[in-house]
Structures are given as structure tokens and as C-alpha cells.
Amino acid sequence: MGTFAVWPLPAKNSWQTPSRGIGGMRTRVLIVGGGPVGLTLAMDLAWRGIDVIVAERRPLNDPPNVKCGQIGARSMEIFRRLGLADKLRGIGLPADYPNDIVSATSVTGIEFSRVSIPARGARGTPAAAGPDTVWPTPEHTHRCNQKFFEPVLFAHAAEQPRSRILHRTEITDLAQGEQGVTASAVDLDGGTRSTIECDYLVGCDGASSLVRKSIGAEFVGIPVLQYAQSFHVRAPQLRSLLPGKPAWAYFSLNPRRCGITMAVDGRETWNIQNYSCPGETGLDHLDRDWVIRSILGVGPDFEYELLSCEDWIARRLVASKFHDRRVFICGDAAHLWMPLGGFGMSAGIADAANLAWKLAGVLHGWATPEILDAYEPERQPITDQASRIISDIGYQVMMQRNELSPEVERLDAIGEAARAAAGQLAYALDMEQQCCGGLNFGYFYDRSPIIAYDGEQAPTYTMGTFTSTTVPGCRVPHVWLEGGRSLYDAMGPDYTLLRLDPTAHVAGIVAAAAQRGLPLAVLDVRSREASQLYRHGLVLVRPDQHVAWRGDAEPADTLDLVDLVRGAARTSMAKSA
Ligand SMILES: Cc1cc2nc3c(=O)[nH]c(=O)nc-3n(C[C@H](O)[C@H](O)[C@H](O)COP(=O)(O)OP(=O)(O)OC[C@H]3O[C@@H](n4cnc5c(N)ncnc54)[C@H](O)[C@@H]3O)c2cc1C
Image (cartoon, rainbow, N blue to C red; front, side):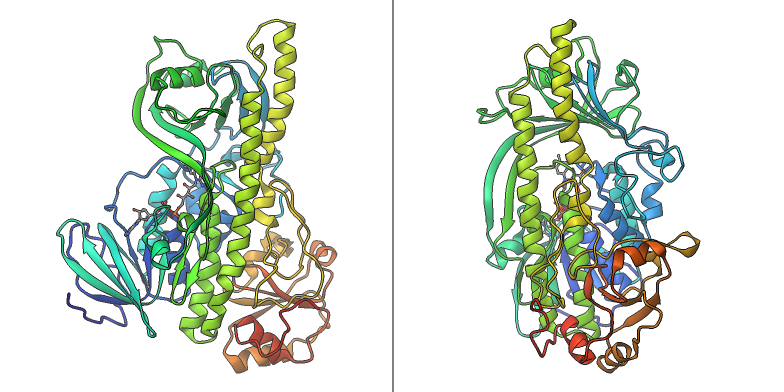
């Protein structure tokens, strides 16, 4: 197993030939797994000037799994910073296809609840109204299937001069030492074995993660919540059978088989999901064709083509640790839950955004390696909270199906009354799941060693609700600046000191940052909205848009603050005042 160092790496991405054998290599960060999370981490690191290799088993242009149907708003904010939000907005459902969420007796049956969400082409126009259009964000949840967005992520990651994607490459083993990590790799086409050396390794290798196991982490939680089947079908006839305005998602609720159907291309392809009911210990006893027809509400003469199907298990699991010395895990490698609210990938993207700047800070030399110890206490509690919030709504959805009135399909007053009751509950549950502003924006890091807390408690959040605030640890509130510019576009890529009080002195923090080499931008914020929301004259924002510190004047020891946020704390400033 020969190893040769090619550091610094050539700027050109030349390793995407699917069947090429690999030699020994060296990189700064090796990412195991090129799913949506690994690709986001690669883009973020490359954007921050860090050379990165992604090892991915799948070949280039492998057809993506169609399971993900939406990219959460917070993920879209992250993609906006990385320069690909516009590319993503341009793909998916037809621009005028409604993003509504309907509950009905079946896809072609009687509708009893509709949450209206604007089509992507209508976003930003005066006509666009919906429960999420008032969120304080420059980006909204994008209902777009993985079939469309994954190739865009691959292409964007591959375009970055500092990232390389090794397709058909499997990492089979890893060993870490004082100076770095050595991973064993196999070229799945040629069978050649080799090594890749790196300073840090991140496992974005999905639910059965080798990297998770290699750091001795275990999944803790509930291994089986529900059995599920997904069917990807081509059914060109279905659109003409929809009784009303088309919707993006249909929750079918009837006494035979409940399930969810999502429009994939808005024309002829659909993703149908069937979940077990309480008491069912599997789904193998069900006739799959009958399941599909019951959820769609179509007879035996209805034609469809089954493009793919997948049986899977809904779980609630969070890894017992996210980090061991030079090795980290992100995404499904670190946490798994039911896909209600479509937030699993988005939580992984948030892991990646949290870790990327810390790794970059260490590798550029302005942060100490101890900054990396903040990754786990920041991300593990948040993903544990998300897993519980989502399981709770999952339980309510199961009970909704279980307690559904058998009269819900009757065409008389009794049926109408049953649908009115079902509709009320369905609307509340659909809103909670599909307009989950709290999951996107409400979480906060309240036990981080690199945040200067000031004693104010961050506001609690639910799946659907949140409060924008500058309490340290929270996502910095988004506001629109003069000329309609997003605050997030105006902030620097690294630390940004927001000055809301034009008379506040910042020279001390600027000098301390310069002394320690911490990249810092100062941004004067002139915005009525911000002055009402922010309440402090100065707010120090981290590279991941979370608040690190706030005050009306600089702290007495500015070097102390700068050392704290770069992982070199000399005092107990991180503890609540
Ligand atoms: C039915 C369903 C619907 C969902 N809908 C949504 C949604 O709408 N929105 C949302 O946010 N989330 C959704 N999720 C969750 C989402 O699919 C996952 O959270 C997301 O795919 C996790 O991404 P990842 O990159 O961490 O892992 P994966 O997507 O699993 O990617 C891991 C990658 O690692 C590669 N790999 C694994 N081991 C190795 C190795 N040893 N060497 C090299 N490569 C390796 C694999 O080939 C794979 O490409 C849904 C989940 C399900 C089941």
C-alpha cells in the first residue's frame, strides 16, 4: 500500500473519472460520503480555502434516490452563502406548480384540509401569501426533489478548485494518530487499494456509517418506530384525476390505507409512502399494488409504472458522540429520525455548516484545535431535540390515522362531519410539519465553550414557532438593509461585528482580532427593523451566522473575547454571567 504526498494539491479537480484507480494521496480534510451533507461540507470548506477530498462509493451521475422532497429554509440560507441558492431555485417542480399540502380521503378523493404554499415562481411577488412567507429570511423552504437537487450539489462541489470527488471509492478503514488520520480506500471498479492521509476526517457516510463505528460511537434512542415503504411511480394519468388545484403533497386518510404522495416532477412522477399502523410489525403482508391504489384512490384499470421502491424503518437515533480527536461525524451518520417535516438532511447540512468554519479556522491557524471541541456540545443537543420533536409529531400523525372516523368517505352529513373533524386536526398537523419554522430557525447553542453568554435565556421553540433574538448562541436575526440587501449577504465569510450604535467603539475588538489573526469584518447596520430587534449596540456574529457575543460597549478585555471565540479561552467568560 504505497503512499505519496501531493500536498499542496493542484487547484484543478481532476479525479472524477469513475473507474480510475487511486494512488496514495494527502489532503487537509477527507470527507467519507458524497451525499447531500458531505457535498455541503466539501463546498463550505473549499469556499473557505481548504483542500478537501470526498470519497464516494457511487459512480458519477448515479441516479439520485428520490426520497428527499424539500430543502429547508435554513439550508437554503447556507446554500445562498455558498453561492448556489439561485441554481437550486431554478429547478424542481414547474415554477407555477402549487406547493400546497392537502389532506384528503385519497389523492383523487375528497379534500378536507389544504395548507396553501406559494409556487416557487410566485415567491417574492405580492400574490404570494402563505404561512411561511412572513419568516425573517432571505430564503424559504424549497420543495424540490433530490432527483433534481443532488446533481446540482455534485456539480457545484466538483467545480470548486479546492475540492475533489473520488467516485467509486470506498473507505474501508481509518486510523488516527497525533498528526493526522490515514484512511484505507478501495477503488470499487479496479479493486486497487490505497491510502488517503488527512489532517481531519469527517464521516458523512449515512446511517450505517463506518466512521461512527470507528470512533466508538453508538446510536442511542428508538431503533424501530414504524415500518415504511416508498414507491417512485410514473403515472401520467394522475394529474387529470386530481379533483382540485394540484398540490405538492397529499396525505391520504381513509380506513383502508393511509399514506403520503408527493409530486416529483409536477407532471407524471410521484413518490408514495406507506407507513405501518400501530400494531403492525411489518408491511410484507400487504399487496404493494393494492397499497398504491388505495393511497391514490384509483381502480384496477388505472395504469402506472413502478420506477423504484424501497422498504425502510423509521427510527429515532442520535449518536452517543459526534467527535473523537481528529474524526467527526455529520448528517445521518450522527442522527436519524422520521422524515416528517423533511428535516433530516437539513439537520445534517447544519452540522456541516457548523463544523466547516471551525476546521477552516484551525487549518488556517487563527483558531486553536480546542475550538473543535465545541462541535459536539453544539450539535448533539440540537439534533437530539429535533429527533424528539419530530417523533412526537410522528406519534400524533399515527394516532390521527388510528382514530380516523370510519365514516370519513360517506357522501352525506355524517361523512361531512367526520371530514370537518379530520380536517381540523389535519390542518394543524400539516402546518406543524410542513411549516416548521422552529426547527429551521429556533434552535440555539446554549452550552458552547466558544460563546460568551450573558445570562439571558434563549427563547424556547417548537417545531413550528420561534423567536428571532440576539441572545448568544441563537441564529442572528435576519433583516433587510437599505436598498433591499440581505443582512446575510452583507456579512463577511468569517466573524462579523455588527455595529447598530454608530457611536460604539470597536477599535479594541478589531485590534484584538488582528493580534490573534482572527478574520473579522465590521458592518454598520442601519435598519429600523434591526434597532428594534437587536437591543444591543454591538453584536459579534460567527461565520455560521450564530451570535457569539453582544454588548452595548466593548468588553474590558477584548483579547479575552477574541480568545474565547477562537477556542483559546483564558477565563470563564463562556459561562453565563
Ligand atoms: C422517505 C424519506 C424522505 C425524506 N425527505 C427528506 C426531505 O424532504 N428533506 C430532508 O431534509 N430530509 C429528508 N429525509 C432525510 C434525508 O434523506 C437524510 O437525512 C439525508 O439523505 C442524509 O444525508 P447524508 O449525506 O448524511 O447521508 P446519505 O444521503 O445517506 O449519504 C451518504 C453517502 O455516503 C456514501 N458512503 C457510505 N459509506 C461510504 C464509505 N465507506 N465510503 C465511501 N462512501 C460511502 C453513500 O454512498 C452515500 O452517498 C428523508 C428521508 C426519508 C427516508
